[in-house]
Length: 242
Ligand code: ATP
Image (cartoon, rainbow, N blue to C red):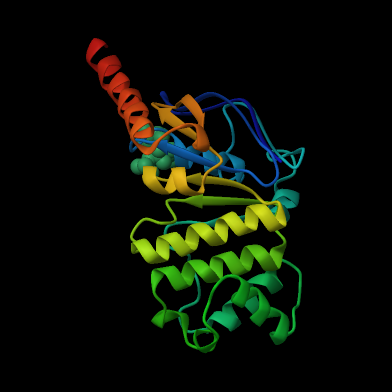
């Protein structure tokens, strides 16, 4: 579903992403870990067509993102750390408006079902989003992905600032999207524990390189932490040698 082929991105002279080759099939959750500036957001931005590759190709559902950016937008959904919604509209109104922009007019009853599946309490749906917690706004983000029937979902530090209960619930919802809807998920996070909980595979980035990829089920939390630290320390060693 998601494919990066020899993908590189350079800003002026700085290499933000170096020769990434990655395939994420439908129904897989791939978590990207890495220190600040490692290239996680750049990778997501390239997949979403927010920025163009310097070298290489990005494909979503076999479609080249740079060649057909409008077609790609119909297939993908994005949940950043802070989901941007209209604060004076209710959750229901936001979903009606934003799913309408994607070309589908749903009835209120259908919208309520999407919001329910995303875990939003019924009483909250008719409250203004300006009164919502971060976790509730993210649930509206999930409902938008459901209403769009998105084939791929991009998450950039989605659990940052969520309490453990909300973070856990969020992870379950994402797992559900992958399992029941076959959505391919690419999630950038600093939360090693969450990556191991929700991810099928975990990639660790170091200075623009995807330095290692492991199956979440194959590593213990402590081994994952070790691997992460080894990768980051490698970066410091490289810097000092330069
Ligand atoms: P964080 O965990 O802090 O979000 P990240 O892993 O997402 O970091 P990126 O945001 O992808 O890292 O940044 C990778 C590198 O590319 C960094 O050195 C960053 O300064 C650089 N970079 C990213 N966007 C731009 C831009 N628009 N212009 C110039 N440099 C950029």
